[in-house]
Image 1 (cartoon, rainbow, N blue to C red):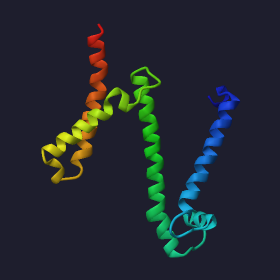
Image 2: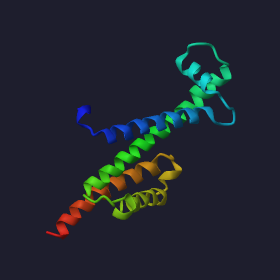
Image 3: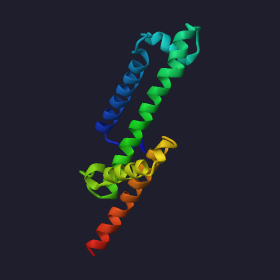
Image 4: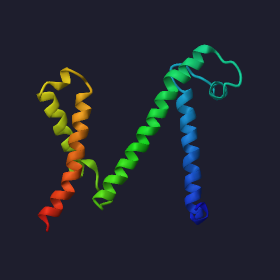
Amino acid sequence: MINNIPMQYKKILALSILVLITVFMLSLSMGTVSISFLDILKIVSQYSPVDDMYRRIILFVRLPRVLVAMFVGMALSISGACVQSLFRNPMASPSIVGISSGASLGAVICIALGLSARSLYFIPIFASVFALAIAFLIPLASNWIFM
């Protein structure tokens, strides 16, 4: 399967992976406490002992934060591609299509009902449910209106 990919795309993929690794290592090393790349590699590989403070900073603060940021970026890019393929429009975005407005409506309804005072998790749940509902209702409504 890799043999069918043109060389230009292979170069772009290799460069993207190189940039990802570079940004990943820079994100782990930069902060209030600067940690060298060598210390980061020692901590991740557990090859040789490193200062316990550095180990805790990397493993419990920076590494989870960087990994979550990477996964959120991947999820956003996949969801953007899904929205564009769902509506068959390369310019489609959640704000143009109305998904952002649906999410806002869900959050406002949650706040108006007073559910946000009970738990902070209700606002993202309501926003997600309303955004998904709008995302599925818009194509149905467009097919119904233009039949």
